[in-house]
Length: 278
Ligand SMILES: NC(=O)c1ccc[n+]([C@@H]2O[C@H](COP(=O)([O-])OP(=O)(O)OC[C@H]3O[C@@H](n4cnc5c(N)ncnc54)[C@H](OP(=O)(O)O)[C@@H]3O)[C@@H](O)[C@H]2O)c1
Image (cartoon, rainbow, N blue to C red):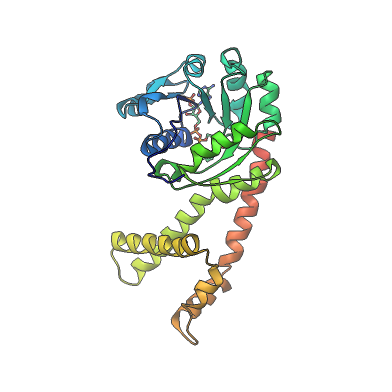
């Protein structure tokens, strides 16, 4: 589906249970995609007074999860891992197996756990995305238990309009949390570090940040737009005895690739413990 295509299917009414960082980002992305009017997106959280900024953006807001679910066809669960069981059990009376699709974006909570808490055969999809969904540049990974093929297709259609999607097996969802969910922070920190280097060599901080961010975007676009490989693109920049290879090798001597790899592995291990903590 094209981002700005004209023959898009309306996403219907969507309830987002847990309007925190990612819940609000999904709402903003959905509204920006034109697939949903803001008033057709109902955002809930327990401290409803914190929803005023979203109300000002014309979203429907509520502290009443069940009323939100009754008004919607799609329910996106975006509460914290330790809050998920109580939230799902609370939704149970409002869930209709013939009507609703539940999409959980909760890290570390499996579809089997959610199905057990729902105690109803409601269509269920698990997703992992990132905060770039607010600007429709998310990386979203999706999976569903057998028997949920139509729901998975519907969820994919929605998230395709909000960035890129990939359907994966559920056992890889924690890995998706580390690489795609946490990954936004890793790349932001890399851009910040590049801008600090830029300031040290002469640029004002705002110039350095712009140059670092646009250069990072260019690097990503070289890969995404042309299916390039990082090393073949790097080869085009590294002339023999040149300044790029010298800088790059210096970074590697300080553990650049190793730091990124071990950071992602550590985040993956931590993600596995998020729900287990209970
Ligand atoms: N942030 C990310 O980039 C990201 C990316 C992918 C996945 N995730 C996952 O998405 C979930 C939310 O993450 P987050 O960063 O958005 O956390 P967050 O900012 O803490 O948002 C969670 C929200 O859930 C609300 N909440 C908790 N229990 C509720 C209930 N029973 N009914 C309604 N609302 C409830 C909380 O508000 P009240 O306390 O006011 O109820 C809070 O606003 C987590 O499981 C996280 O692992 C996050």
